[in-house]
Length: 146
Image 1 (cartoon, rainbow, N blue to C red):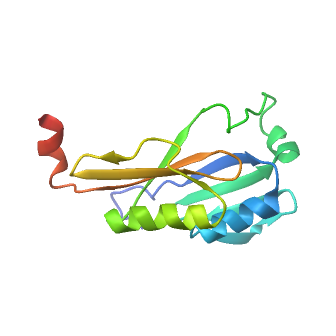
Image 2 (spheres, rainbow, N blue to C red; image 1 turned 30 degrees about the vertical axis):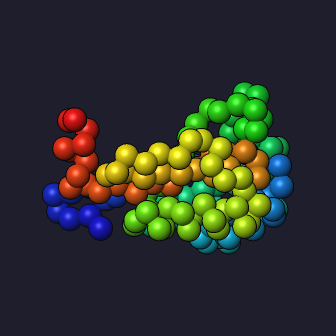
């Protein structure tokens, strides 16, 4: 919430090209997002992660309305790694388990365990990689200086 001296929180809308909107919508719902029907239809789904983070799942035809560039095959190339924080290490593992149970691929990137920070990843059915990580903010400054 904005105060008199602070700007309103910014929002991010992550636009992802998907081959099957219904399958991707089901996957993202299984990993904890909620579909916003106001901004969803047969060619797209707006999936809410938080009050400020949204994932727009767009079929390839709809995605091309926004960009004329070639849509890469995320199973073969990496253009972006998306990272979301988690409350603790157990929540990181739970996120990977939920993604795997919903048809995602666990740990396409190496597991990271630095003591103060723990992270794992999953790929959605279209190959987009999401990292889930926990970090102890009190230990992070000392660990990064070492």
